[in-house]
Length: 253
Image (cartoon, rainbow, N blue to C red; front, side, top):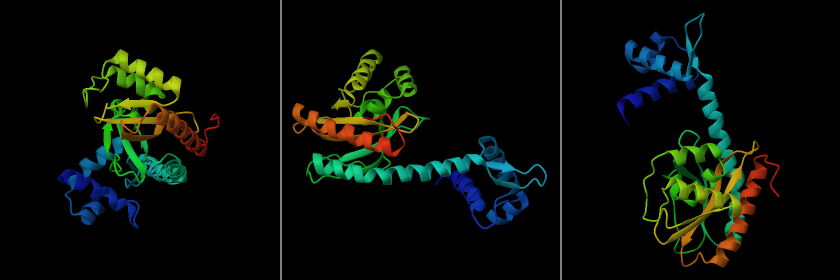
């Protein structure tokens, strides 16, 4: 771990113990760091909203921003856990590994795989949870982007690097692909992230009707026949709608 990051985490972790507010001198004694270093970090943390200072006592405590981050982490874990029964049901009915993925608001060019339920197929895509891929190259990313206007605008304006020769990076062609995704209700990626693999994915809506999540499958092109895509896409959309309902979205059919 980089020294500066280690120091920053050590300082933040001091606030999650029994003592919840600190003076700079106390933090020096607790962490072993010199006063100028602690003052520098606290100033940066205050600017980010991670740390707050009592104007009367001048003591420091955790800020609202870290509380918001913690709540988001707990909430997302609950989302993944509540979605698992639906993911298992999909695998039982479809026979392919299914992934739950997301695009973070701060980085529309990146899709992150956050959960997975494996099938028994000997040849399948196995992604590491937490792994990241260029959003515009994957079915997962494309279905989320197509149903999130802010993400779509950001992606179409950015310079894109092809992952494979099949990756769509031309803005006009990519915009047409997003439009087709919205029309059919799911995305298709044919070798755009990995050669000889075809993926499809459907969007998941939160209670506000915003899409930052999706569910999708990848399989060798020989298995992803038109008939199989038709059948599995219907199951995938139903799974996504079920998760959306769990999140409080009321407009799914």
